[in-house]
Image (cartoon, rainbow, N blue to C red; front, side, top):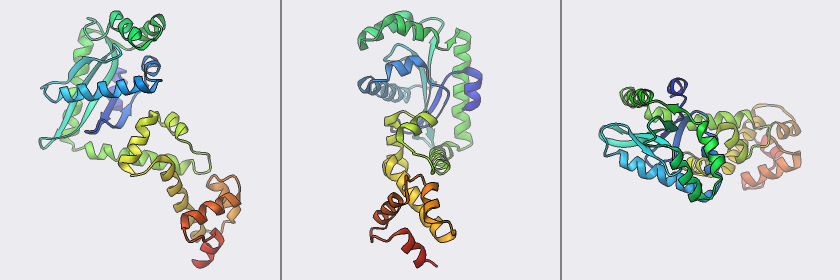
Length: 266
């Protein structure tokens, strides 16, 4: 997928069957950020993805369409042993013929959502432009990528990359203040999508999962090191040892302090 993006400069995203993103590669366009910065419009984006993904199941080739915001996208379903396991989607971009994305479609979308037409046209002109030949080649590459994922049985490996990415991020930032907003910014996830992915893969909210990782790390550091409690508190991102102690007592449920826990495991 990274190679695909480097060659085409078109964002590519892998979705599961619920249209939750599993992995995406590429920088989201300013046009899309302008459209999606309101919850209602973001819901329209998701509903558009859902509708056309379902439509793509009936197509023998990757399916190109105009999105609700007047841009061109393409999607292809992924089947494993005749069972739908996800979708792969590319976009947004402009096409040479204007069949899928044109100035008229941008103006129509801007009027629909109460956006400044001139500003949206400027952002539209910054989108990747694909000539007719480039569009054909891009769709062919997409088709080949789907085949590669199937042949190499990569889908479930790719699905697990989210959990790996999140765990690596949290563990490398335990000493910092980790917020959902910061994760979204650093890892380029939409706020709603991140919550959905956490519910899917960790069965809890981002906040609860971060607390779980901090608590597990605290237990490990208390039993396997001689670090002072204050140093462990700092290493795990707490403002002061008393806050860490209260956090630990709540997580232990029995009200056991960090010191008591350490002493009981000597």
